Image (cartoon, rainbow, N blue to C red; front, side):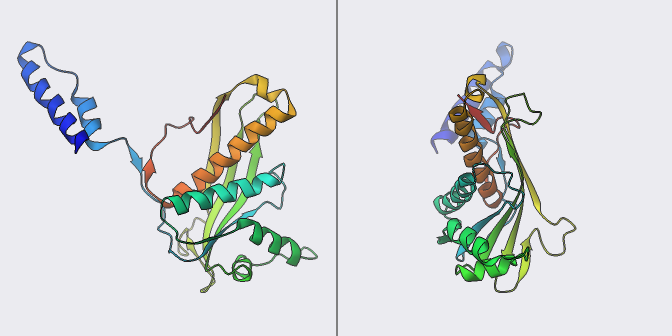
Length: 222
């Protein structure tokens, strides 16, 4: 209500200035009334026990501990936003996959979910995760493909099974960060931790309405 009152006041003030050369506060007033631009959820998750599973068989995420950072962040956000009531530790799913996959036999996603007691798996296949795209420009990037699997019915629900798209691609790109961080191992780790957190955040936002960020402002490290 406070935002609405501010917007109405601005419009009234503008009306009083029309005869005096017009008013340029219509845009800001509309922004105050409507709020910042937002992006709708791409899929409505079922509120059932869910695990976020990071599939990184190509080992693009290094150190590997950052896989858990990505999954934990996504799980945490979905709980905070009250999209999910219960999430299962991503680490449990990673351990199950590592222990049971032998001789290059890939464990089906729904089987991983069953082993940890999940009814739904947010399956994240990592494609890219690095501090630089070209080997020298300090601009961290990440890319992954996301699916949601209904464990009990053994089917993909996002993207829909009838969709020609097999997965939702999520790209994360930093706009800039201090070159000083890029010169030390500790600095690079700090940047990668930030990238992992942002990646998890972006994954979670596929599933709830959120404020739209300007492209290229996803990650800015000090």
